[in-house]
Amino acid sequence: MTTPQHPPFPPHQPGRGPSAEEDDGRSTGPVPVVPHGTRDGRPEADHGHTAERAGQGTGGGHGHGHGHGHSHGPAAPVSRHLRKVIAAVLIPFAAAVVVGLAVLWPGGAPAHERTGVGFDRQTQEATVTKVVALSCQSANPSAGTPTGDTSTAEGSSAVQQAEGECKRATVRVDTGDDKGRTFDEIVQPDQSRQLREGQKVVVAYEPSAPKDLQYSVTDINRQFPLALLAGIFALAVVVVGRLRGLMALVSLAVSFLLLNFFILPAILQGSNPLVVAVIGSSAIMLIALYLCHGLSARTSVAVLGTLISLLLIGVLGSLFIGWAALTGNTDDNTGLIHGLYPSIDMSGLLLAGVIIGSLGVLDDVTVTQTSAVWELHEANPAMGWRGLYRAGIRIGRDHIASVVNTLVLAYAGAALPLLLLFSIAQSGVGTVANSELVAEEIVRTLVGSIGLVASVPVTTALAALVVSADRPARAPETAAGAGAPARGGRGRRRKR
Image 1 (cartoon, helix red, strand yellow):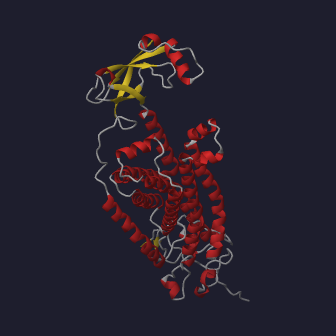
Image 2: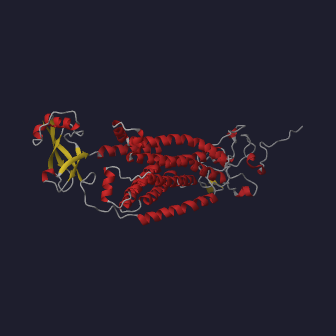
Image 3: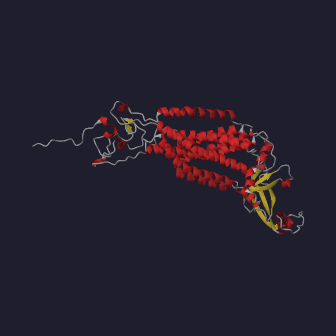
């Protein structure tokens, strides 16, 4: 009796769709394996394992395969039609930003005659060459005899200056027309900044003063430690972030260039601070996001979410700065700016600061929410936009709590000396909050936080709508009824 010979594998059934290639991880037929990096004889920019996607379960000789694949490619791509819709929104916006930069681009900060007050002084670099101790009485022969009353700060300082030990520092100017010139600086015992030999300092120059009083030490030269710290930061970012970290540093440099060569000079030349801030922030946003995260639909959704949130911050900031009658002229620095350039709208400058200050945190929130929705869609492609939104917003709630707390503490830390001063004066909470100095920070913090909170549902909804509205294209062989869907591995991969 002859035993019928059966083929080692059942015949391939092309009409069964994906189940023809994988059936709960069991091999059902021979699968033509396309070599990695090619498709139908043509090169393929696909970093996933094609053999595993084409037929999970070949098993390499085993009777069953592994029911999972390993894809190293990017997250879910979107169709060409959807990319056109996104481009139709963002390309006109980017063009408007470019036009705004061209129209408002300044030729540089306008010149003015130095006042010699605060930062508006001529400064040079210098070195302390010698420090000698001497009695304060001999160092200040013209000083009057103190009364001995140390109950006040002035009386205590006068006693220390008369009875304490002062220092005479010889300082050499290292830059400028007077390079090599030396002068003496008397250091009082109660000064917070004590000089030492060999120390690098910054000196102010006042040409109208008597010759022996033209130079004075104003600060310590901190360029080297700051440059070293910046180098450590850049190294850490590149080592951990690699190419992404390098792109982040490039975008940071571009942001500083736009701030120094466009935003600040344009405001000084009299352009509307709000318009300048919106255009400059938009340019920074476009460059930073696309440089760091690539030119993709995912990044474009984050850009749209950031843009909508910035508009909300601008509207709320303008409303409440005007309603609270905040002038933006609250300290010596803003007073000096207003004195030198009276045409600058100081309240508009305050609003511009709110928008620019919120941009950095907004980028973080919108990119994170968009990536979360994209990954949720990859994990479960059958999930509709409502399911994606609900899952993404659950992630966003944790993000809201941490980001808002971060923003509030950042502003509180910057204003800590001011808050301490109010605490010393034993002022009530209402009195402190009502002062313009603190009210500015409150408006800045709350408006920025509202924008951050709103960015989470807005960006999450945009991302959910985009990925759920996409319909994967069918490959040519699938259209003929003889292949798998595009998501399987034999279809044409689409760009994100």
